[in-house]
Image 1 (cartoon, rainbow, N blue to C red):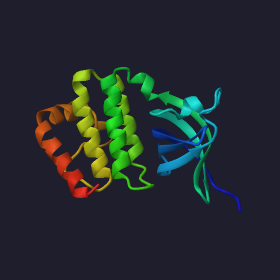
Image 2: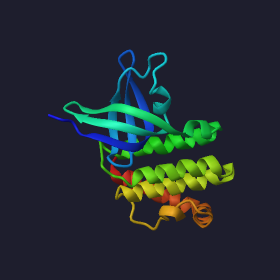
Image 3: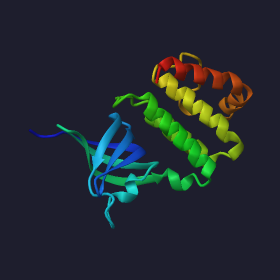
Length: 190
């Protein structure tokens, strides 16, 4: 039986080492949503795929679905968000939001809205001044909650998601938005 190959774009949200040289990747992809994929021999010295599979790498990936789950068959690095997020604070914000996605998405989900949100968030963190990062993180979390059906309130979407006007509102209404986020997460039971 032929296995279907998916050529898609994805961001590595987390990695778990399995065995001596293998890794289990949590990949947020544009076509198949959030998946857990096995990557073989990527921890060996000189592994060709290794740079494309570090945490917060955005890569073009080839995934194969088999009996035992997803397997990574290829990867080409397109953007190293870890390198672009130079301060420990920006990297910590990216890790918090990545961790929240992993916590709120039980197992694998074919939600293709999450990758553009995550990509927009990382781009905003990489390009905006540090005093805007808190507002950007709040906006990203609200969008993720809305995409997962956990928040019914108003939230800017698409190109306007991290625009100056949205950031200003998030800064002005920070306490209200944080309370809303906490209430949504608590209501999710996750």
